[in-house]
Image 1 (tube, helix red, strand yellow):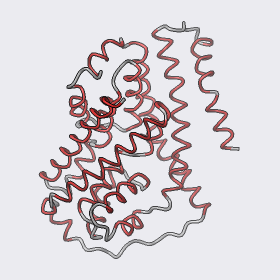
Image 2 (cartoon, helix red, strand yellow):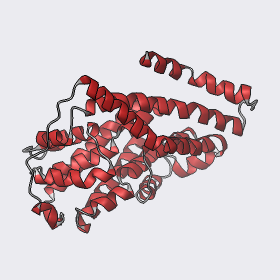
Image 3 (tube, rainbow, N blue to C red):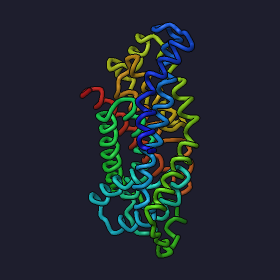
Image 4 (cartoon, rainbow, N blue to C red):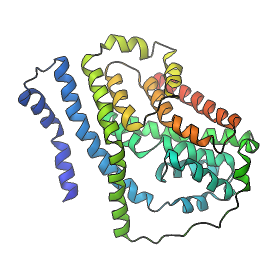
Amino acid sequence: MVVVGWVVAYSYIQPLANWLTYGLFGLAQGSHLGESIAFFLYDVPKILLLLSGMIFLISILRTFFSPERTRKMLGGKRQGVGNVLAAGLGIVTPFCSCSAVPLFIGFVESGIPLGVTFSFLIAAPTINEVAVVMLFGLFGWKVAGLYVVTGLIIAILAGMLIGKLHLEKNVEDFVWQIQSSGGGVVEHLTWSDRLTRAWQSVREIVGKVWLYVIVGIAVGAAIHGYVPESALVGIMGKQAWWSVPAAVLLGVPLYSNAAGVIPVVSALMEKGASLGTVLAFMMSVVGLSLPEMIILRRVLKPKLLGIFIAILAVAFILTGYLFNIIL
């Protein structure tokens, strides 16, 4: 019944948005205000429904990958294979900025190589379920798939590069002095437990990001209805070679999440901005968020943190150029 209700609700979003905008509110089709309101009323329920459905499914998958089990799976893995496995696990395991330090310490104390640890730390926040779901909802499976593949490649190669540089001395000394406690308690969950946790995850995550969704879509709606197409083509189009590095540099100090930035990305693209430029901006905002960098400073010395930021910034710039060339 829940699935049927979800499908029915999703199928009626577009006609309901149009009826509210042009019927009930009486706004003219093609007008700036009408286009903005229709965009807002369509995207808000669509994104929230997609988020709820996909987070529920992903959260069930996550119950099979606790932090303790993840460390055990990565333990003993060498560079290369370990980086690939770590990046893949980073997508489905629980992660947020506040858990960056304990996860980092737990990986190091388990003997997982530094480069492998960074592959996980890069993939986990960058390729999160919110970003994937919203990209799928706004741009389709091809763009969402390219985003996932690109993020995985960046996480794998960046982790391997950090491993090759042998930067262990640039981890804060107290991290190496922590002794492993021998692992956590392994939980034995029933399917009822998994479904309950999945529903709790939906409530928690949607409860945290719904305001970002609304604000982001409101900004996107304003861009969609009022910003001239020619203005954005000149600034963020493929012809402006400097737009990609400028977008990444702009994104580094900003704090947002996928829920807030992707609706803006969608509106920018509708107005002629190139996919590579806006994708590089989005990856910079999500993957190099200021709070996470501040938290990671507790376990990384300035040199290693600077190298980490620089590697990701260059990777995002190259990704932006690549997408602009092939798409």
